[in-house]
Length: 252
Image (cartoon, rainbow, N blue to C red; front, side, top):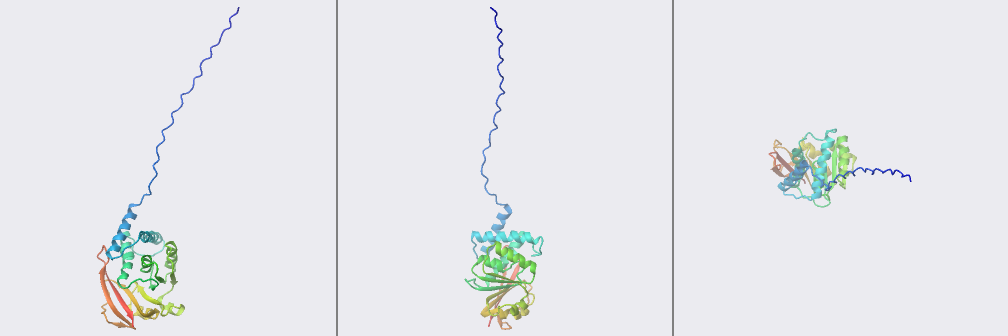
């Protein structure tokens, strides 16, 4: 009997399975706060405390957003000659809040800020006391565009922005005797500012001007065009050696 040759099938060689790479455990990342932003936050808090003011966390966030937008826009629009981060906080934000040494921002008080530029002192005061009614007067159209932008971004209500000069507004708008407080940091000539600003104030309304160390020699009790100088408040800006004077006038 013929024997059939059996062909042995060679076993199929299977390729060894590749080891699956070990998956790294993903740890959810915590939001990282930039060191610079954290430092600015501390600076704002400390500066406000030095002025005997306290800020809520959301107000500090508003100041930080204001700071960031100011820096960003300043690269294209000349909003301020101050570009150092710390000096922006001190010479703009804290200097603006220092006006509170001269008046109390009670609810509904009507404030006009003349020559506001990028919003100083008006917007920092509005952040601190959101229930004031604020009018900002600024001659530069580009700066007014920024003012509209930042007020929308910060969700500030009851803010009126007027692109004009002080000497024109009383004839163009219904501003006569409408305001309780008149503020300005851009004061070259006190007499001229009072001449155009006093008609906008209600009875017993006050004007507050911020002047540097070398301001003209004025004495309490001096009367200029129906405004009497009530107080001269000298002070130094927090965390600096920058001297300031607030001149507080009242309508008589």
